[in-house]
Length: 274
Ligand SMILES: NC(=O)c1ccc[n+]([C@@H]2O[C@H](COP(=O)([O-])OP(=O)(O)OC[C@H]3O[C@@H](n4cnc5c(N)ncnc54)[C@H](OP(=O)(O)O)[C@@H]3O)[C@@H](O)[C@H]2O)c1
Image 1: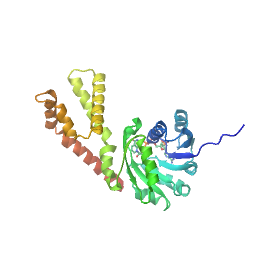
Image 2: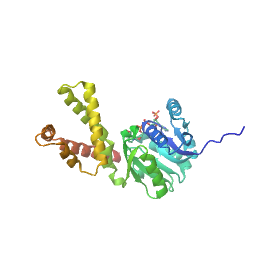
Image 3: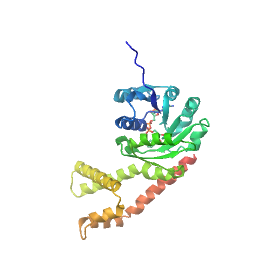
């Protein structure tokens, strides 16, 4: 019987936690790669076992082995572990593309841990990547070629939508799309509380709030209309919606959201300096 040769590893994940799993799922669902072309590396045996059982991907405890086998590497460890992993893989990476999702770790810090020829992209995805409605911004480092950027776009498009920006925007991106899901969860909770106050059962109120915000977000994302115009379409003269909008304005809702994004952006800048 002929021995079956394993296919080449296309993507290695160093640190295979929540974000890596979201990307693994997205890449497989989008059929960008077959399962044996993905390799997850992690410290935890249990984590690797779960990923292998769920997705049939290859696994290893050795970051170096994963990098050696792969064409492209996704760094998915926590920011405080980045330097240690870079030191481990530096001699194996060569000119392969490394995409780091580590929040707040600048390209300069990544480049400092690697050889001069390394191609690096800093990515800032967000939590809804888990349900493949993520928002990711890619900031390519110097010398990243068009083919590598195209591949990175394909990968992150598999977990939502992707934009390419200069790295100087990433603190603001962190403040808006990085922290934004938490702001939206507070909004959902508050809308549901409003429904409960008006007499709805809690479960129904939560479901209605989530579906309403999902629908509004889909309309806004699929339309070329300014959100203010979409709001005007649903606010009929003398109706219920304009009364509610007046209450929101009295509660200074716009300033609260602007302040939230600004505060998160500021905090991202502070953390980047430490
Ligand atoms: N989750 C998000 O929504 C989100 C959004 C944007 C950016 N990010 C970024 O994505 C990165 C990962 O976040 P996450 O939420 O996926 O974290 P996570 O679930 O904690 O995943 C990190 C994984 O890396 C493993 N690890 C630790 N040291 C390692 C090493 N030396 N070699 C290989 N693996 C190692 C951890 O194992 P142990 O648990 O055993 O330590 C863990 O399984 C972070 O840098 C974060 O800033 C996440």
